Amino acid sequence: MPTDAIRLDGKVAIITGGAGGIGAATARLMSMRGARVAIADIAFDRAQTVASAIPDALAIHLDLEDEASVEAMVAQTVSHFGRLDILHNNAALLGPDIAQADGNIEHMATALWDRTYAVNVRGTMIACRAALPHLRATKGNIVNTVSSLALQGHMIQAAYSSSKAAIIQMTRAIAASHGRMGVRCNAVAPGMTMTPALREAFPPALRQVVEDETLRDQLGDPQDIAEAVAFLASDAARNITGHVIECDGGGTSHVPGLGGFRAFFEGMGQ
Ligand SMILES: NC(=O)c1ccc[n+]([C@@H]2O[C@H](COP(=O)([O-])OP(=O)(O)OC[C@H]3O[C@@H](n4cnc5c(N)ncnc54)[C@H](O)[C@@H]3O)[C@@H](O)[C@H]2O)c1
Picture (cartoon, rainbow, N blue to C red):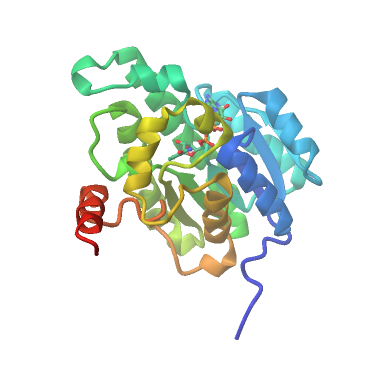
């Protein structure tokens, strides 16, 4: 029988890193589906701007490197809305300077490694730890944003990709420990997703390399990732827990070098 289980009516969600890109799209979509949302970000001004365009939304200043700030985010949300049903851990240490500095292990700066893990892994762990008692009460769930880079080896971004892989294992651990308490935990692994920031900063030649490996005829946008997150967060996904959903236009689904194969076979008229 068809149901409306994809709706989020009556639910309260925290979206970390909700001030832009994928997080802002997810906050807007969850609100459209009936949730009340807390938008938590270190960029508080931008979080306020996003929140001001969403009915009943709350903007929270969050610094994932600061344990007290992460715990306060959960406490403030529960105090404001009276409950917590969904924690979407979406924030990450990103930006052109960080990406530039995050190369291979031989050249890794220990400080960059530590900071990446402090924001992405430790911050996510503290948020989950603070949220779990409330999620047990509501039979709620967690959705973590990881990356297709966590599932494949690459010559760049060793700190970022391995931190995201750690979040995948954290996802499974929480799903296993809290499943019988009614709490689900999943992850979404986006491929390259055309946020306004990435559209501006990413070199077109490298973008073409990714496009050639994508099975769809275009790269995903923030709305595509938001749809996967909002689905996992909904009761429609009640039978999915401990899993990673790859939302990447098929980019990680096929034999290596598909772009080259395509060029070869097209050259033979196939
Ligand atoms: N865009 C992509 O191609 C892509 C691909 C794979 C995975 N992802 C993941 O998607 C998520 C969202 O990324 P996005 O592309 O929308 O970029 P984004 O820069 O818009 O989002 C990241 C947010 O995290 C916030 N943030 C950074 N450090 C923080 C801290 N210490 N405390 C609190 N907030 C902090 C930033 O202010 C920003 O708003 C990230 O987890 C990213 O790793 C993105």
